[in-house]
Amino acid sequence: MTFLERLHDEVLIGDGAIGTMLYAKGVSLDANVEHLNLVRPSLVLELHREYLAAGARVIETNTFGANWTRLAAIGLDKKEHEINLRGARLAREAAQGTDAFVAGSVGPLVRVKGDERELSAQETVDIFRRQTLALAEGGVDLLILETFTDLAQMGHALTSARETGLPVVANMAFLENGRLAGGIEVERVAVELTAAGARVVGANCGAGPLEILGTIQRMGRVTDLPLAAYPNSGFPEYVNGRHVYRTTPDYFADRALEMVAAGAALVGGCCGTTPEHVRRLAERLAGLRPVARTVAVPALPKEERRAESRGDAGFLARWGREPIVTVELDPPRGLDCAKIIEGSRALREAGADAINIAENPLARIRMGNIALGSLIQREAGIDVIVHVTCRDRNLLGLQSDLMGASLLGIRHVLAVTGDPARIGEQAGATSVYDLNSFGLIKLLADLNAGVNALGSPIGGGTGFVIGAAFNPNSPRMEVQVERLVRKVANGARFVQTQPLYDVARLEEMAERTAHLGIPILPGILPLVSERNCEFLHNEVPGIVIPEEIRHRMRGKEKEDGVREGLAIAREFIDAVRGRVGGFYLIPPFGKYGIAVELTRYIKGT
Image (tube, rainbow, N blue to C red; front, top):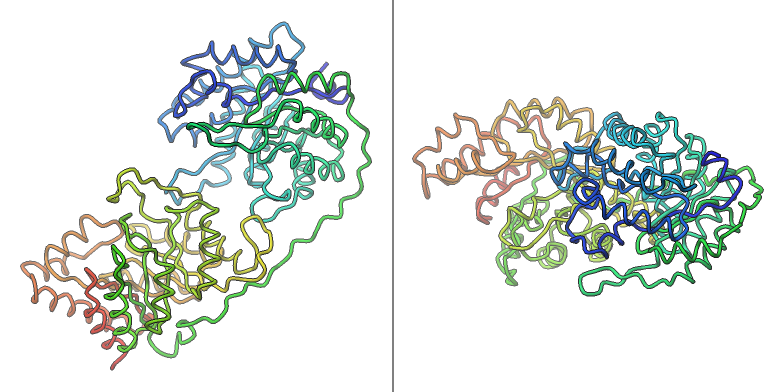
């Protein structure tokens, strides 16, 4: 009898967590568990047999993270096929002589931290194809796609998995209230996965048994496919360096009975579950058949088009009527804000329109720029553009801090990925990068529309005017323009560029971006010496200084260097005034007086 025939005839018991149990068996927390298929196969085989002995009739291969994106990050990409093939064969060996089925486990792809390049649809399909074909070659009976939170990526994985001809279980990991990131409801997920060719749909991970139960109940109303439920063992506690799950096997099995009553035909466990959880499942669910369900034609909620709340456009309201000047000032390294407040006031009096405040630039510790920005707006009476990076906060922290920024009156946010922590001065600091700049811009637009990353209402829009960064100095500007198009599509409403010194580069940028129709402020970083010039050209990513400019700065130091740097900046401004509507000034070493002088020059005061 095939897997699908059995599944229509009886409730099948899946296995439990693999990683949890391998770590419990002494595997180091920093070890790659999929690599154990090659270096400690007996340990993996032992675990499969423990789950079979407990009553599991569907065991998963130890290959959840054995895709190219995850393996490449730790230098194991060359062993991608071998790890998957061996993982399938180990599970097959364990199941030999039993009536159990082997499911090839496939997890989602990950983005390399700090890398803004996103895989194309075809690249994504190709990566999943390699993994699923290797698992099929190893002899699995079915494929289980699990812990996906992105419906589009699940669709690509499903496309690849179906090419094997094996039945496919599609399990999503839902967030709060049965939603995916972006607010997609569980009902729509079930309908779309059914239409895409999944043979079983369900939910895993994400939450404990009670929340998965609610998800299964909702799925059962809109699809007639068999349902799968693989909950975590509740929420973990962090004890002595490990995550400990407290849900008892008896409680777990009690909720599983309710899942079966709601339509689940394949029930197993995810994070924190053990052979003992599976044993209780097998005892409680023994002899049960899948329940008959009546599926109504789903009345799916329409996709809402939420109006974006941008609030007052602030300094950009004057765009096109007068040249706009924004100036970047460095936050203090400690608690003394006197200099930056003084500089902000002087720049406002000179005619500057907004102050930029970076967030720990070059991954070096500075005062938090959201609170500082609020103080500058209150004390100096000038708009502030707060730079927000993806490096320092996870997705939870970003949302909380951005809502707090809105509360404090911050209205302009420049979304950047951020320099990796390893280049900074703080030993032990790590980069987060839950999002990249594209995702952060989308998050800001969602908050403006009155919803968080889950699509849940937040009680009003944040009113941010969203900025994006652009590097015109790239050897392939067309690639940067493509990236900028995506940022604008995600919600960016103005752009600030890396420092420019080449008029021809600016003219090319203006021509290639004219169709976007949003304000673009070229960066101007005045040079102050030959040493400063050579450092910027040779050591700072994204800055290219033409040989002619470098020649002019040779031998220039101190007052001569500042004078020549200002002359070069004025010449650049004069040469491009007719092509741009404003400038983004970046005074070196916190010398705001240089920015005051250039602001007056631009404004003609």
